[in-house]
Image (tube, rainbow, N blue to C red; front, side, top):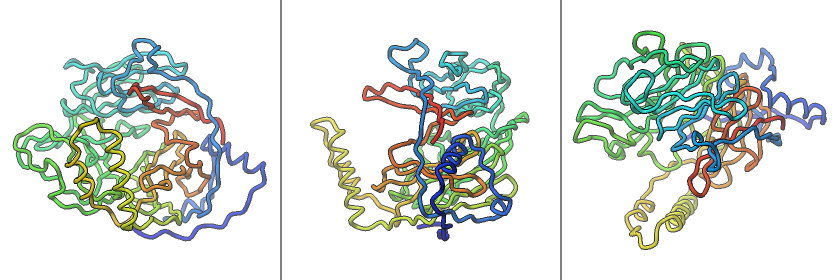
Amino acid sequence: MSAGTTGAGFVHRARPQAEVRRLALLVATGCLVTTAALSAQRTVSLPAEDRWLAPRFEEVYRIGLLSGAVWEQFGDVESVAFDGAGNLYVFDDQAQRILVVGPGGSLIRRLGGLGDGPGEFREAVEMAVMPDGRVIVADFRRRGFHLFHGDGEFNRMVPMSGVTEVMRVGPIMALPGTEAVARVPTLATQILTMTRELSISHSTHAIEREDLSGERTSTDTIAEAWVPANRPEDFPGRNPRRRGVVGQVRPTVGLPQLSPRLYWGVLPDGRVAFSDSSAYAVKLAEAGRGVVRTLRRPIRPEPVTRRLVRAEKDRRLRNLEETSRPGTDLRDRREAIENLRFAEEVPVVRGLAVTWEGLIWVLRRGEEPVSDGPIDVLTPDGRYLGSYRTGTMELPDAFGPDGLVAFIERNEMDVETVVVKRLVGS
């Protein structure tokens, strides 16, 4: 069910070609300035009509090719990020290392590596990179964060405070200009439990600010994002028989199919942009104040009908047949698909990211309930700049300065490649 209703949109008219070109440049650079009156509004209604943009890229380099250098052979690229100099950071989860790649595609240095020494990882799970090149790495087994200086030298280890019975990390993002990260522990894909009884019932996703400036971490809540109600019996592995690592215990694991998910990103000024409902509502929150603005477009969620449910189940059954090995017994998996529960609406938003300059990219759903559609470009103060048509643009895995973007690609042989491009206009 939608968390709130959408508002009425503004009416806008066709623009002269010169103004369209100027707007395209502003989209690419993030330099658009909005009025003070608009930024003062708590809820901003964006226009209903799409204004189409045409992306134009220049490929800068790609790494991970089979014909490339030995250091390019990736195991499992968990994430990528840029610093302010345009250097790319590639976190290889399988190799437990971070590769720092210069603007021309050459290796600058390596961070981490499996081990118990200073700056070595036991089980690194998340990476965040500051504009000045400082790197923060969450280490699941060491129950803390590795901090590296901008030149790659190891700084120190900061233990997580409050870890008694349960430890979880969740995705982390850098808070520029600070010694802190934002994170969402309830989105962790695994936890470390020191007890036989495990409670995973959460009514919200807490978006937290984790301060790393002290001897141990300290935590404040930036915002509470919505989590749909769930049933305790839907949590797999909810009461482990022994202590240890438990996988897939997020509060969203047992939710009905097509339930709203939390998508979020950090703005350059430290505010957080997120979407947590089936409606088109992008919320902006800041520490100490919570949600301070909501950006809405009057695009309504599609009701989930019996016909839609049947079509989605049939699609999954076809995919199961096409991807399974001949002779595999699929009866249990077919039954599981037939017994799936579905939410009441198809969420409008399927992804969200924030550019280096602070623009918010919102990925909408496509023609099918689980397909990707257009990408909207918004400013935090409430201006709709335009949309990239379905299929012309993917949501990048990382944004960098001066229009740099990075994509993690995987070919039919499961070989991972990281492609760096520059968005030069629309």
